[in-house]
Length: 218
Image 1 (tube, rainbow, N blue to C red):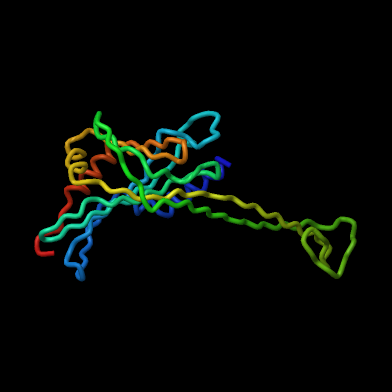
Image 2 (image 1 turned 60 degrees about the vertical axis):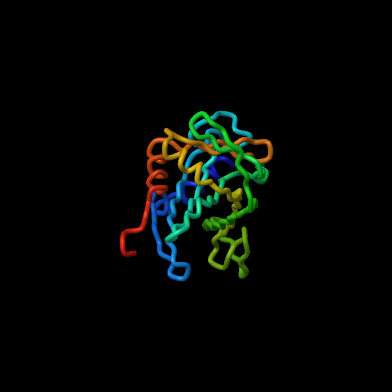
C-alpha cells in the first residue's frame, strides 16, 4: 500500500511541481483588491499509520495553499487550505489543532473538514501464442482467439485518500512568524498526530509571501 501511495505522490509532485514555492500576486478588478498566494508541499514529522520502519518515504505529504487579500484600506489575514496525502487507515482531520511559533504554542481551529477518496484502475492485456495449434472462432478474456493466440487481461486498482481542511492565521500570528526562526502546524487525523514544520527555505518563502505587495500603479 505504502509503495503505491509513494508512487502516486511522486506523480502528483511531478505534474504539479511548478505550482509550489512561488509567490503570486493577482489583481481583482471587481473587488479592487490584490490577492497574494503561496503553495507549499511539505513533509510531516510522522509516518503513515501502520508503518513498521520510519523513513523519508513513509512520511505524510502535506500541501498548503496560503492566500491573503490586500486592499487600499483593508488587509485580510491568511486563509490556509490543507490537503494531507493519507491512507485508508486515516480518519478525517479533527477540528482542533495547534500552531507553534518558536517556543510558544497556540490553539488552531480547522473548518471545512472533508476526506476524499480517489481510486485509479489500470487494465493491462498480454497475448501468447497457442503452441498446440488449437484455434477458435471466439475471443474472450483469458481465452484463445481466431489467430491461435491467448489473451490475458489483468486489472489493478490503487486508492489514494486526501484529508482536507482550512484554518486562519491571525495578523498577530503573521507578525510573530516574521520574527521567528520557524513555525509548525499540528493537526490530528482522528487520534493520529500530524506535525508539519516550516523552516529554512520554506520559512523564507513564507516570509516573502507575508511581505509581498503589488507594484506601484497596479
